[in-house]
Image (cartoon, rainbow, N blue to C red):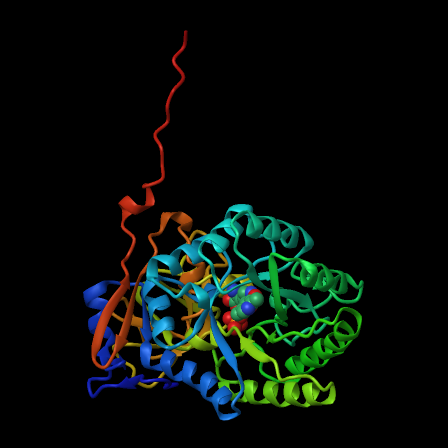
Amino acid sequence: MYTHGTSQISEQGHLVIGGVNTVELAKQYGTPLFVYDVALIRERALQFQEAFKKENVPYQVAYASKAFSCMAMFQLADELGLSLDVVSGGELFTAIEAGFPMERVHFHGNNKSLEELEMAVEAQIGCVVVDNFYELAELSRISKEKNYKMNILLRITPGVEAHTHDYISTGQEDSKFGFDLVSGQVHEAVQTAFEDEWLNLLGVHSHIGSQIFETTGFVMAVEKMFELVVEWKERFGFIPTVLNLGGGFGIRYIEGDTPLPAGEYVTKMIEVVKQKATEADLTMPEIWIEPGRSLVGDAGTTLYSIGSKKHIPNVRDYLAVDGGMSDNLRPALYQAEYEGVLANRANEEATETFSIAGKCCESGDMLIWDLPLPKANHEDILAVFCTGAYGYAMANNYNRIPRPAVVFVEDGEAFEVIRRERYEDLIRLDLPLVKKVAK
Ligand SMILES: Cc1ncc(COP(=O)(O)O)c(C=O)c1O
Ligand SMILES: N[C@@H](CCCC[NH3+])C(=O)O
């Protein structure tokens, strides 16, 4: 079994995470259940932070909360000294309710609504990452109206495409995100923002993609940014104090995935930024990053109960679980691959190969196509690893399947942080049919 974080196998052969027996968790909270290894989240955060501290570089590590957001996660992020990247009024509202310090909140998004911008200014958040000219003008207007000078970064698309799945590449020129570099919009944006008395332009932001295993893309993005910075200094006298290099650091989902240790991405970024700043005779800027997946991805495990089985001779054996694309859209959306074990028989040798199907009414609702397991049946609990990022976050009520509960585990204790949806929750927004009364 692939052991990571605090996961272990007990003498009984049960999967144990954070000192808590997952078979007991499944009994107590039901399945599907998301289990987060809090110690592993702490470790990942520390790896990023230590890399900055070692080089004595001013920094912010902002948790990209889209990967998994709930109040407890935001409170943990605060405790870990992380900043927070939000991309919607809903994420910002969650941060406010969680008591997250607003000065460490950064607001992203390619189409923030006016209400969202007003909310950000009223909450006096740390920074808005401005994506387009419309937002630039509206944010300035709102800041003036509310008499609050807002810190901003400008998101640019540096024309760097990270080696990753097409759907999650965002740094290339043809992207819905950010100011385009090739056409020169970015210069106009910098000049406009720099001259605006209600906006405080801190610097620029780029995010080149997700699930990235190398540093090349980040290095290229920094090089591009510095070409621009030198130009801005000459043309407008603007010198950025912040460079935000986004997130996208990869994790190991399956054998063969080879991410770098978290700190290595940072160390390389610092090296290039230092070198470029020296060459350009500029003060070293603060470096901000926004890891999502790499902070919470491999800390999450989903527990499922196994239900029906289907044997198709000479084709395959299906094992169906009590969740699927309703709690993990990634296989259907990106052909993402996962590994798993039987949580109640984690020490038994795999003798069969199963295809793990979800319970939704879609043929494409498959979680894993070929999973080696012992002979499994409906009394077993399947644990799927590395589901902590974009799992619960993209969970949905397709087929009116209630969303799972989420527990944090650490030091032998479990804390429920999101309760399981009940059927009543599913109809809470439904209104009865009101028939028109015929006159
Ligand atoms: C602007 C921005 N920052 C950070 C992230 C987090 O990415 P990841 O979860 O891959 O670290 C994303 C998502 O890709 C993003 O769009
Ligand atoms: N949701 C995607 C990543 C998108 C990142 C957000 N910009 C995933 O599961 O991999």
